[in-house]
Length: 141
Image (cartoon, rainbow, N blue to C red; front, side):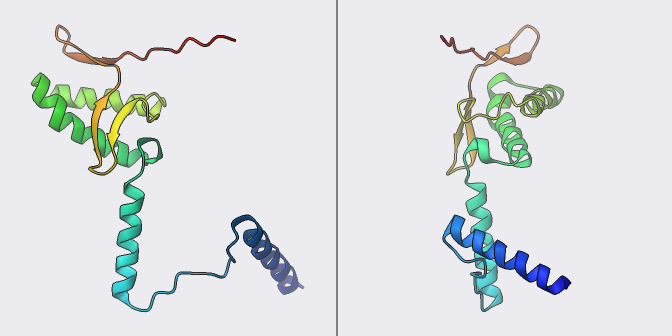
């Protein structure tokens, strides 16, 4: 009895997959050797890393922000290690609050996987802190 129900559900899933994607569920990537498997996986990883900013995982965003702080902001504003940590925490808080998730918020180079600029980033030399000034769009109804 259980096998019949499982087969019906599996057949239904195969049918829905074929209708929605045009590809059968049973079509899999056939890999004959370990080298081909390794090449396939490394290509897949590279393709996933070359996404636009909004499609990157939170971990990848954190890595890119850390790199941006170390390469651009640190040399431009002569930041100390404590200030770098504070800026990183500020940026991660913005990501957690979904303030730096849009492609328009950050100028991101997909090919080099680096951040070129952050829109609205302002440095206060007196307090030695960064803020992001986000302009709200005026929408008329």
